[in-house]
Each structure stands twice: as structure tokens, then as C-alpha cells.
Image (cartoon, rainbow, N blue to C red; front, side):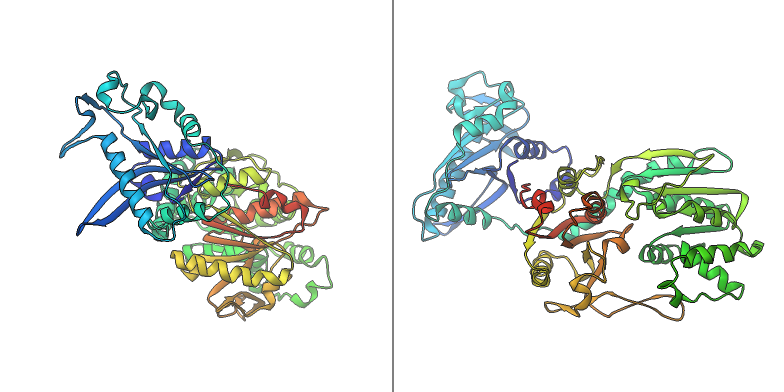
Length: 552
């Protein structure tokens, strides 16, 4: 695939997702090989004779030799006059042939004036009018070999390749000079706020109506198991269900496996329902009946939680601890025995919503059986933007549908040889992301080897930024104790179920004996990113060849 510059297409998508320019960009990226760079919407200006001349070029294609091809796109109806092809607008008319020749002359002169140019800019052009069929060649005022009209509109990429061969990289700096010239022609810094806001808006809109349909299923009791891929909106389904049950004055219990996810869910729901991890719920109940858990025994007693569940079964569950409705999030992490314990706390006709994703089964749990449940499978990922979703599909063996048409800010792979090199790499990544506009709170570093095993767990700072990380301790109220810091660090295991605009995956160093398990781990980690994904991978590990050889 060809490279696009800028890769940020969000503003075009948001203004009009069916914009013809977007369709052409998608086609050029797909059909041109990666020997080409496609610049789009290039705005130029040049001072001349005390006047500033402005212009815009729809597409500039750069080959490996530093040669360029300009493409002027004109959609809709055109007229063939004695002056050539004309596109009429409300405020006047434009001749695309004269327009592109003017742009070529101005850009060629501006390139010449930038200094240190070893040779002049080599360029050619095409006029692309996919909705018009040229009939009067002479009137068009241009060589028909430089026009692609409605009859040959599907041949644009092929014609570009014929006119602008791939070329060979020159031995001098000419290619780099041309590349730098067009990079400086417009601002390549993405609008991060736009990315994040548009991602959130699109996600809520796509999930909202679908969730309402599921929540309106008629069954009594309501027993629904949703098997949804990462990013399918399972948490939104849970919130819709929660609000519906709350409106009916039902007493609600929401349980998950991970503590960070539990804390976030609790913050969003407040005191209107009981939210906890399964183990946290067991502890809370036993404390209510005067039983205290000795957590110091966990290291020496492999049956610690099994013993806890047996202790719970010795007690009669009073109405104070009975619930009308149950939500299980990240159900693939639960065990059948746990579900049996949870049922003790439910009224007989309790409504249950069970949410799971078998592709994120990091702990190899045997699936819980759901007798009497209606099952619904939903394989659409709305969270991951298109560039990240396509990267996941190309590098990992998981099948899902891409439901997010926003481009995101792609994926970047970094390599290391020694794990001690990673903090310096991450520091440089964070500096770049912050220059783009990401705030410190919109970036997270996630370890693929567990947070206590990672080199980052032993560090207080990365570059000039202090680390905000879990200290493996809890306060008297059972809350996690974190260090005070600017840059958040955690593990993929603990962060499952959550998301962040910019995700930096570190410790990408698979155990060769269990590559399938590492696939699952990376899938969980990659799907946390909503805008940008950075990966720091070990160069010597054969598993990582798929990433090191990957090209967008």
C-alpha cells in the first residue's frame, strides 16, 4: 500500500465521510505499492512581485527517485468550451488544465528558491474527472494521455504507475529534499483533540441504537449472554442494561475480574448499584458477617479462594445481600464455581446480563455454561480506528469486522535488543506524542510481561516524567495505592476492559513455547488504543518478525 501524508484524515471523514476525495485516497493507498508517497490537499503559497500567490493541489504522488505527479480532481459536470475544460461554480468557473499548470509552475519555482537544490524538480500531471466523459479532445486543450475521465476512472492507479514509474532511489539527497519540501508545504501535526472527540462521538453513536435493541428483548427472566469482540461496546451494553434496571427500582450487582476496570465502573455508576470484582465481593460479604480474610496466606495456600467460597456457603444469604439484577463484565475470566456462588446472592427471577470475549481469555478459563440464556454474538470492533484494526488483522490470528471508519494515527514499531533500552525509547515516544498534542493523561505504557516483571516497575521516572504505577498495596478501605506520577504504567493483564487514546506496548518479547498465549495478550493490548498505537518489540525474538517487517 502507498503511504499517505498526512495520514490524519479525520477532518475529511467528519466533514463528509462520502467525500469523493476520501474515496480516491482510499483507492490510491490500496492500489499503489509502498514505493509511492501520496500527499493530499497540498496548500502552497509563494511571494512574487510583492504579492502572495496561493493555490491547492488535490494530490501529489512522489516516487522513490524524487519525481512527482500532480493530480487535479474535478467531480461532477464539466463543460467543454473553446477555452478548454471548465468547471462552473456559484462564484465563477475554473479551468482544471490551466489550474494545474499554474500550480506546477509555482511549485517548481518555489522548490528552486529553497536553496541547496542539487537539481530541479521533475514533475508531470493528470486531470481526473470521474463523472465526465470528454468528447471534444481539441476543446479540452490537453493531451488525452493526461486525462482520466468517466470511461477510465477505475484506471487511475494504473495510469499513475505508467506515467510515474517507481524509480530508483538516487545516490544524492534529492529524494529527501523533495520529501522535506512537501512535508513543509503544510502542517503535518495531527489535531489530537479532533481525533479523540470524533472517536468518542462515533463510538457512542454506533453502539447506542444497537444496545437499545438488545435491551428491549422480551424474556422473563431476562437472561442474555453477549459474546462481543474487543471494542464491540460491551461496556455500553452493560450501562444500558444498568440504567434500565435502575429505572425499574431493581437492586443491581455488577461484577468483573480486574480491579482497575472495577474502579472505573464504580466511578461511573456511583452508589446506585453494587460494583466490585468477584474476589472483592466475597471479601466484602465475609467482612459483613464478621469474617476477616488473612491475605498473607495467599502465597502459601493455593486453595485460598476455594476455601473462601466454601466459607461463604456456610452462611445464609439474607435479603440485604440479595439482588434483582446481575451484570458480569469480562465473563471469560470467570469460573463455573464462581457463578454458582454469585447465584446465591440473586433472587430466583433475577435478570442477568453476561458479557464476554473468548479471544481475550488470558487465563485459559473453561467457558462457563449458561443454561436458559439467549446467546448473541457480535464480532464488530468499533473502538479501534481503521489503521490500528487493519494492523491487528494483518499481524494476529483473530477475526473481527472493522466497524470504525476513522483512520486514527496508525501504528509505529520500535525495536530494542536489551530490555534496559526500553525506557529511553519510551521517553522519546512520549515526547513525540506530547508534541502532537496528547496530554500525559491520554498516554499509557502497558507491559506485556506483567507489571511486576517489567523494568518499568523498578523505575520512578521515564525521561523527565515520573511514573504513576500500582504499588502492589492497598489502603485500609481496600483501595489500590498508586505512586504519584505523570505517566501511567500498568500491565495488559490489569488493564483489560479499559482504553486510552495513545497506548505504548512494551516488553513485547514472546515465550517461543507459547506463541498462541502471547497472541491473545497482544490482542488485548492492541485493542486498548483508540487513536495511536506504539509497540516496543525485542529485535532478536523470531516472534516479532511479523511486526518488524510490517509496512502500512
